Image 1 (cartoon, rainbow, N blue to C red):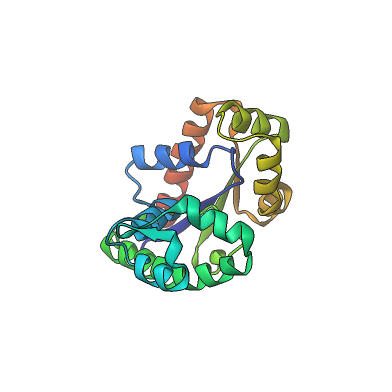
Image 2 (image 1 turned 90 degrees about the vertical axis):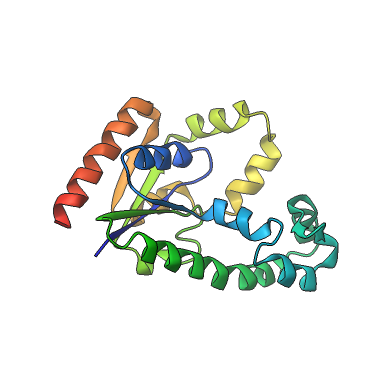
Length: 197
């Protein structure tokens, strides 16, 4: 039976890079963000229910994320309705992925809002990637896709980093660089595979 490891961390902490290292070492990775993109794409399972909830947010058979975000900003109540649509679809996707990879000793679930959605209950372990606040801010602002105000809004919706670290089974500080994080990933895979042998 596969060990289920959850990966999470606040925005700008190095979660995507860390998930990439797990993939490099042959661990199957289920990516929540990627799945939402699939559900919103043309023919995706979320398109019709979202069209029924908010017709203006869908066009040409797919969900326009920018319109959706703008509508949610105007009417925050829509967010919980959207979550009601996505939650069962994402659960089915996870279960299908788990069945498909049931012979793998370790499976990684990359979930940005893992603790915020109480997802840890069905996982065996949770890994949190972290970095000092200054490093996080520098990384995010260097991307050039957001300003300080947008950054504050995003951070206010996420559980504070210190709380995530306190709830985690494993914590990687990604400020030591990619080579260090890759080495930590390799060691953790070895440890968990040994445990599950």
